[in-house]
Length: 185
Image (cartoon, rainbow, N blue to C red):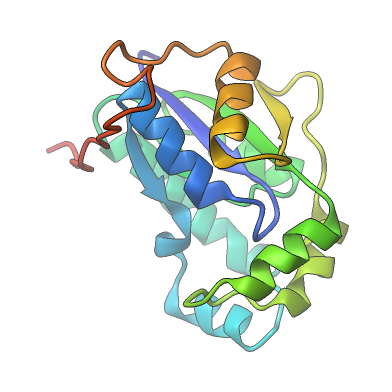
């Protein structure tokens, strides 16, 4: 496996998209927003306040695996990956799949969800996400970092926890370009 995929995971509102974009830019990797890979039926279900079940999630997780395999090079993806068995599915992709769990309290995350606009996930589903969340186990390739502080604080903790090396052109944090997503032929 010559490719690495870092899955930025956690409950809704934990900052997955923001941290994934920053991390990808800092590393010079591509980024994929796994929410974009949900079926229209799953998006409608969540928008209606109905939690997804395993029958909803399994095809979505398989689409994420295909995305990992279809893109050249290393990448950072967002995915809630709340349960060990979901992470086990993601690890079947032909890459080194690592996990970055964004860990924060219910009050902080609830406030974040309440303040954002244009997202299908209602704050009402947050309790079900926390109830579903299974922390990373010691045999899983990854780390948990606190979401306290600024996005750059979280980014620095993530890079240190995963022992990643920023690219020379982005290590200052200035001018962080993200490579475009390019599916392999």
